[in-house]
Amino acid sequence: MLLHLPSAGQNRSLSLGMHLAVLLFASALFVATFALDNGVMRTPPMGWLAWERFRCDIDCEHDPKNCISENLFMDMADRLSEDGWRELGYVYVNIDDCWSSMKRDAKGRLQADPKRFPGGIQKLARYMHDRGLKLGIYGDMGTHTCGGYPGTTLDKIEIDAQTFADWEVDMFKFDGCYSNATEQEKGYPLMSKALNATGRPIGYSCSWPAYQGGLPPKVNYTQLGEICNLWRNYGDIQDSWDSVLNIIDWFFENQDVLIPAAGPGQWNDPDMLIAGDFGLSMEQSRAQMALWAIMAAPLFMSNDLRTVSSGARSILQNKMAISINQDAMGIQGRRILTVTPFCMDLAASCNRRTDMPYRYQTTLSKLNYTTGSYEIYDVFTEKTMVLKDSTSFVVSVNPTGVVMWYVSAPGKLNRRLFYKGGRLQGSEYDDDDENNFPLVSDIHWLAEHNASLTVKVPAAWEHDVGEE
Image (cartoon, rainbow, N blue to C red):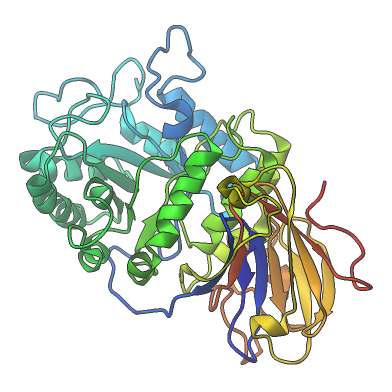
């Protein structure tokens, strides 16, 4: 169960999610820090990334629709621009590994594979820009990329940064395969400096912490915030619920280190959204979307937008969840309470049961709401109700899913401000109210690893909001 609870007297939001036990989260205090001085990614970046879904498929002869080629990225750009994604904020189209030729050109520059990218990267970038989108590209600071393509060693950093700028690239992910700790300590800051020196604003994604265990003393998050716009803290996501849970566990077990590092222009990155692929149910897809939103995580989908199901589309295009993620203060959620789920069996597996819902009973007053009535907005069903602080309600958590609530004082929430004319406008609150605060100003959540939440409020809302 995810709960969004600003301090007394402020608007509040309640969301409901998943974890091994039921967890209550609150936002960390915002600490002003200075990120990479390129002016980009002041809110978590959003878009589409090739890797999880399409990997290193270079067999264009036998799999032309799905191979890593300019046609694939143009297809995804068309879908982002024509199917309502761009207006919601999904603007990056990111190439990952396996895009380049196996050899640099005569001047020592990286070059795209001429068969799979016959128009070159600059032409692809302009294709994106013509559609109101941005192009991201991939490199690796080792001798080779993870897929075995030419890497960007220390002596190649400046020429590669300038090449990307010349190509009009908007984002660069710098991986760390085939490099050591000493090279990474030199290379990641040098690339930041080189990108800035080009004069082109290029969002910079660093994989550095993931190669050093993600935690101090090997990882200096203060330094990362000064040189990178976002960074991969942990291992790659895979197309499975176990992988999602593994990432969630690590992020919240280490939240005291991670939360202070996040803020406008500098983001912890738990990796891609995988809704619409093969490994997650709809319940699990909603759960990942809700948790990533609360974590102020970059929202990079990795799926096939040409064939994505209507269910996955509705989750990934959920306007309120996106608004929570895109809050201008950029505060990452903190876990503040663990409530062990009831289990008839004493076996440890009961904590992660997937066979029946988990029921949690509470009131808003027990969650530190002041006396009064509150408007409840269900993020995924879009249903509303009014709930008094003293009214007891039961949250019934379905296996591996999520229900997410936004809670505000009646009259304070103006959902029409979110997307006037289909475009994100900004504040979730009425702008003329001096007591309004950004959506993520104080997040509390309850989450259970293996359950989704339904909510019953007797005489106020007579149905389960999490059941389909």
